[in-house]
Image 1: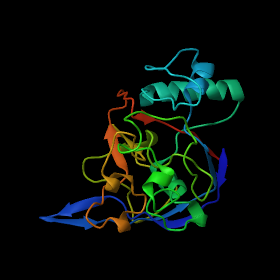
Image 2 (image 1 turned 120 degrees about the vertical axis):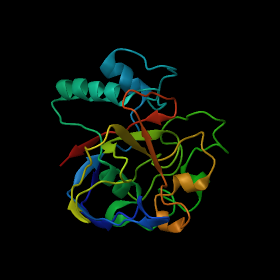
Image 3 (image 1 turned 120 degrees about the horizontal axis):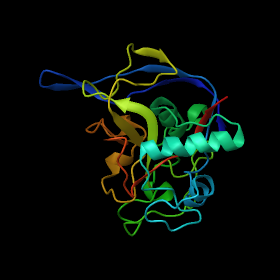
Image 4 (image 1 turned 60 degrees about the vertical axis):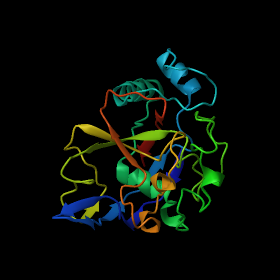
Length: 232
């Protein structure tokens, strides 16, 4: 786990529609310190905790993909029982802050670089498959694969009324629990358009829904995995 020092940032992602116009919605977000996984949880770690192999098991340092959010929550429950810790999924706000490099951010378009190939497995270099974690460059905080490889489940839900559904534009440790569908972040090995991978949407002015996906909590795809977080 990597300690992410808290701070305040402009969560300038998401949009709301006003008539025929799409208008950016900004949130002034403050986060406490938290920990986040250096890597996506691997299939070997999944097997160790769950005693079963995820669908499409390859093993070793491959990300634990093909796992639904419901299955991930069961993994976390068993992991916490075994370790005595309080691991959880990151909130969407925590995930974005960590992907951008936290208070060490250099404002990169992607997590750790302006060159997508340096930090991400995507459609044009992945061979259309997931890769072992940690093979690309890390970002400013030493986190790997925050861009590409597999989407990562977050704890937040998605509400149809808006991309983000916080009550105020200035929020502390926000999370959205009003929707049914679950947010995932980061893009995946089977995506081609670079806009999907941006962790700084201001670098992609014609696409504000960057780096974001939503699915039913029972969904499992080879392109979705997860990483752990923990409050300090």
